[in-house]
Structure formats: structure tokens, C-alpha cells
Length: 338
Image: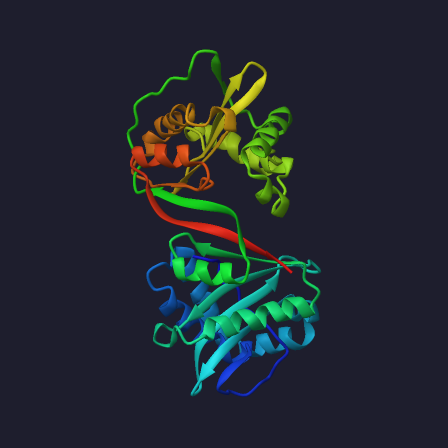
């Protein structure tokens, strides 16, 4: 599910028939209801939570009025459109800059009521959004779509959106019991110590493993692999209880060719595992890395595990599924240059 993004505009347009800018002071509840119906089979827990936030905002109109009139930066930062018929919102699209002052924009929550589909409403919402980006001197528009939503992907391709990268969302309700898989001769294990030298090595590994198109949109930062002081303290305290965050590296001589980072969920929270494999070693070391992670987590096997590999890492997807992980969804980022 695409993350829910509330939208603000300066428009105070009265209810009408057809396309108009979203009015956050009156429309939030209806927009939340529409999104819930339009994405009935795909809303995950974060999506449900975001819908609840939209409905809560509907009850705080005085606060919204203050933000609406006095927070000019926020007003310029977010905007969107709805399609209304007989006083009822049957279509919605959210539009925002990726960050304040950016020339890159994000479209989200393109939703049309099931009873009103195939009437050109989605096309009208897209046309209005792209025209607004053009008038704002935007350079590019990005959006996320489910890989299995063929209708939406056809619509976006009609507007010349191109695939950038996909992320698969996999889950196991409990930690699977996995046999030990050994590394090929010549490779060796090393514990991931989360220090500065290793951060640089894993940064280089991540750059090699991530498609260039994705790196152009979201540059990889070395700081992503470096633990801050607070995180180091939490990890040190966690060792007293069996470890909260651990990892292992696979080395081919001096080069790191694989990494698994395991974050154990505390107090019932879901475990999380991240895997990075150098392209030259794909299909070879995924199972040893995953098995080591599962063997560590098996002590807390009643808790679920979340995995979010890049969808182009097909060897990792196959290994996870062989070990009992189920794919919940795959989301694809698409981009259109203006």
C-alpha cells in the first residue's frame, strides 16, 4: 500500500460536479472512506493507521485552519485533486514535492470508487496533477504501484512512466527452521561490527548491488550503515538479552561480497532482516546468509519476520520462498520526466 499523504491547497471551492482541488477542511473523511473502499484488498496495517489519522484530522478543523492560513510553506508543499458527484467524492489523487523546494514530485493515492471506474476519472485526475507539476516547473514525477495492478500500470505507461525499481514485501508469521548452508570454498564469514571501516565496505557493496536508475533517484549514503551513539548503546544493552541487532559479512579475500543485518524485534515486535549480495555472487551465497540469520532468530521463533528485498534480486526471493516466506506484495517505483 502506498503511504497515505494528506493534501492541502488554498482552494475553498464549494462542492461541485467533476474535478476540483481538494479542500482539506471538508474532504478528509470522504477521502479516507474512498481510499478504504478503493484499496479494500490491499490495505496493510500502516495503511489502516494512516486512514485513521486522516479521520482524526477531520475532527480538528480549527487546528487545520491555523495551519492552512499561517503555515505557507506547508500549503505550498502539498496539494491534490478530487472528483465529486452529487456531493460525494468518488475520485482522489495526492500530489506533493519529495521535499520542500524539490523539482521532483510524488503522486500517490490515485483512487476511484469501484462503481465509477472506466469513465475517465483517473485520467482526468492524472492530467490535472501533471499539469500542476508542469506549471510548478517540476522536473520529474514519481509514483508507486503494485506489481500485480495491471490496469494502473497500463495507465501510467500511457503517460510515459518508466519502471525504476521494485521492492518485495515478504513475511513469515514465525521464524522458520532452516538447515545450515555452507559457503563455497574460498569465502569466509566475519561478524558485522557496525564500525566505520565496515560501513564504507558495505556502502561499496550496496552501490554494486543496487541498480543505477534507483541510485540516481535515491543516492546511497554511507551513514546508512554507520550506527550512531544511541544505536550503539541500544545494541550493547541488547547483548545482555541475547542480542538485538547482529550481522555477518561474507568476504572474498579483502572484498565484502555479502552481508546480512538482523534486527530482533523486542516485546513482540516483528524481526527484520536485510540482505545485500554482490551481483557476481548472486545465486551462490543467499542461502548461507539467510540460514545464519534464521538460526540466530530461532530462539525467538514465535515472532514473525519481515523481509524487503529489491524485486530484481530474484535469487534472494526464491531462497526466502523456499524457506517458507510468503510474498505480501511488490511495489514498483515508476518515473516520468517532465
